[in-house]
Length: 213
Image (cartoon, rainbow, N blue to C red):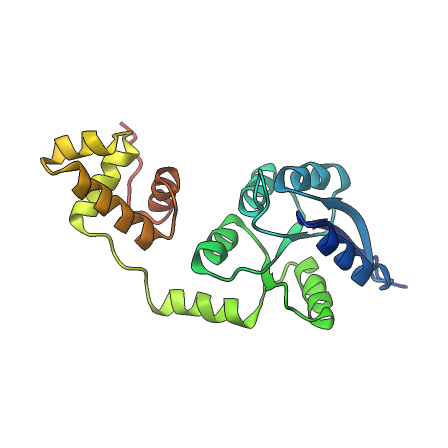
């Protein structure tokens, strides 16, 4: 008895990429491309309606990006496995996607045979990573991120409490420029781009404690 076909959803903002991926899998009887999405929000909507086995997810898309879509799928309890397929392999791209719940992470220069194998692997719920991404993740494990200084933690706590840079400066009796400098260092060390992401990452890593009072 033949194995059931793997149902695929393709999410990428470039039509030519979607067309190429659809053509790649259309000729293989083991797969069925059931839908295409041009952004993360559409990917979540189609995943809920079509219930794919695997979603090939680009990361940088207008509107709702790939990481936000992965988080939303996880929140909704979607059973679909998400296989990231992108051109970016920096820490700021890889780590958030993996932490959000992606089953795998491949680059768009991956060959056809390797991509097909990766989708089959992801459909089984097994992790699959491109060599450069695997090396980067191992480096993260072997070389922990720079720890935040005591002053940076003070500022991060104030940010978590909703303080502006000016308010944090007044509370700590330092200049606003100094606070801005510390904030930039915090962003770099945590691998984030804004205050909300810094606070969320800090809570996730246990740098900030939840106040239950």
